[in-house]
Each structure stands twice: as C-alpha cells, then as structure tokens.
Image (cartoon, rainbow over all chains, first blue to last red):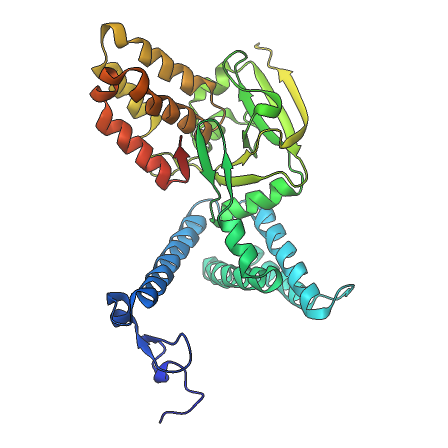
Length: 274
Length: 79
C-alpha cells in the first residue's frame, strides 16, 4: 500500500528516492531514463561508494593498526565530533555524549576487538565522520575542503580524501613536525619548499624510501635535513606520496604540500656522513 | 609509468646530443624530497621538453603523455 510515509515505494534496495514522491529505479536512473541530472547523481553515488569501499579496504589491509595512524584518525574524529557535539548541545557544553560513546567503542572494537569488529568500526566510523562533518560545518565546507589545491612551480596538487590523508591533514594542522631532505644546490630549502613528509626520513631510510616513493640514494646522498611546522591558516593539502603514476601504490606515507611561505620555525641541519 | 620508467626509456631512446636529457631527469629525481615532488619536477621537465627540444620530445611522446595523464589521475596536474 502506498502511504505518504513510504520511502522508495518500499524498495529501498532497487530504487532511490530523491524527493519522496516516486521511487526511481537505480538501473533506469543510471541509464538516463529520468534525465541527465538524476543519471549524474546516481553515477556519482555509485563511484563514491566504490571509492569509499576501496579506500576502506586499502586502509584495513595495509597500515590500519599502526598506533600513529590510529592516533591521527582518532584526532580527526575527535575534532569533528567535538564540533558536532557543540552544535548539538550548545556552545560551552562540557558533556559530549557522542564523543564519550565513540571513545568507548574505539577501545572495545579496535583496541580489544577482532578483525570483524575492527572492520565494522571502520565502516561506521567513515559514515559518522562524514555525517558529523557535514552536520557541524555544512555541505559547503566539505565541498570546499574536497576541492582544496596548492599550486607549485611544477604542478597543481589536489587534496586526497582517503582516511590516511585526512588524518595526515589533521596531524599537520595540529602542529606536527614536517620533514624534508635534500642536496644543497639542487633541492629547494626554506620558505620556498612546498613538499614535506610527516615522518623523519633518517629514522628508517629504507621504510621512508618505500613509503614516500623516493629512491633510497636520495636519502643516503642527502646533505641536509629541514624541519618546520605549518603556519596557522596556511593553504595546504595532503596526499599519498607513494601514489606514483603507474605504480601499485604500495607506499603509505602522507606528504603535505603547502603554499610557498606556508611554514614557520624552519630549521636546516647539515647531515654529516660517518 | 613512473619516473624511473621514464628515465629508463630516455636512456634507451636518446642518443648523442640528447643524452643531456638523461642527466637532467636524473637531477630532477635527485632533487626531490617526496614522491609527489619528484613526480612534479620530472613531469614539468618533460612537459616543457616539447618547446625546448621537440625532436627529443617526439621520441618519448607517448610515454610522456601517459606519465602526465597518470599524474593527473593521482592528484598532481603537471604544469
């Protein structure tokens, strides 16, 4: 029976319901039967779900359980949830029920959990983060964040929306140390430097070379290392440095690309070879 | 098509007066601190080769285009 409250004519798997009037069948929508706009929305949704599933799978099968990764991801979640809870309970509120529940679930399902509970947590987490972010900051801010770009003399770098990249963005924004190595005379230094790593290349050069898609010789032959932090309000993006053209994207390092002059506290140290 | 593949192709196809391009690509690779930086510097050098040395560019045109296309798909639009 059709009622004013019926969603997608009771066929929510096969059909979508954009306006609450009539169900739109997914395959027909994608084929363009309901017009170009609906076909475009349908395709966008499908691609988004595929990308999200792939991102989650990559995340789960690679470095999902590294402590530092989780710390970054959780910080991102915490910031969003904090903002969301403020919005729900009013400014100045000291109790954040959603955040408290989230912390409990994190401990229960990720730290003490098994692979099933972890993957369940990830899927819920992704949905919650996006929902909370949109609720607290508005759809416009999400759109604007997603379309963030930084221009360098060689390329225009776009923000990656993978969980790892988002976690890296939060880490960088919270004042994490940025690193770059190079060779004096051919590598950029100081305020002009735009590509930075979130990990120290000298701590584990082999791992860094793999994660950041850099030849090991670059690290071995480097004669300086520079550190800095992001300037407040600097325009920057984060992306997977290992995502090289044509590669299978084996690297997990997140690079920060910042506008020229977007870093402060720059310290350049010479590397003395033993 | 990553920057190492491009370097190998340049080594194979470029001869005599164009061998300096191999050295240039090598230097582009050595100057980078992260994968994105190396890809950007190498990509920009190859893109500009079209205006600077068209004959050499033509010898690697398909591979250069592939490199630039894949860079763009990975979030780095080479200029």
